[in-house]
Length: 257
Image 1 (spheres, rainbow, N blue to C red):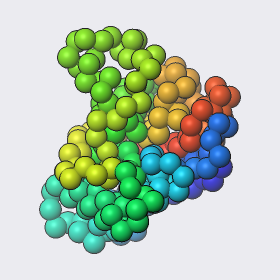
Image 2: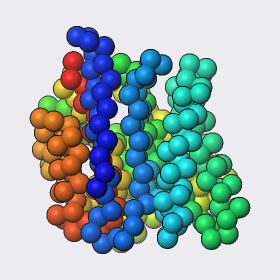
Image 3: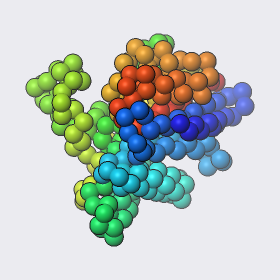
């Protein structure tokens, strides 16, 4: 397991603490997830990213690494040049292109891709961009709200009223992705939504290695740990305790002031 910790703050006015952890899990022999945290370094924003690779062997791992790097670098180079939703969509589109370019140049990596969820925050406002089934949750006053909608075939059936959320949670095809970065998709259609982070709120970004096996009730309890570093670590431990069937990533962001 590796962990990251960052803090963005305006003393006495605003502070967000961020901690991330990423683990191979119990059932897998290598890790195709990637995470990144970036505190506000004077450009006015902070950023968190979780990617979950697919493609087998080293290909998924490469796709996740490309996505994390490209999205972070694009936002750093272009922040302030366009509205936030446009910036995030363009960053995801570029990551999609770079992953496919790598796959075309490396036949062994054909079909590689990754899911991705990213949060860009400016003070108490934050924007969530995602594609695939990596998720973002917000906890507030002990309640959990999933603020992303999975891009999966099963979720589409839920949205059409053909399956209940309870049926979807145990459906054998629940992991079949309908959108992602790379994987030969010529167009990246990321969803971007805007939200508010109140004092005491937590955000959780995670891969499906966590959300598939850790319940909302347990997420609420663990995200609320006194220290965000303990929160991200204990979320990983909970997923491994539940069998660790996949790679596991968790980033916890908390507004302190």
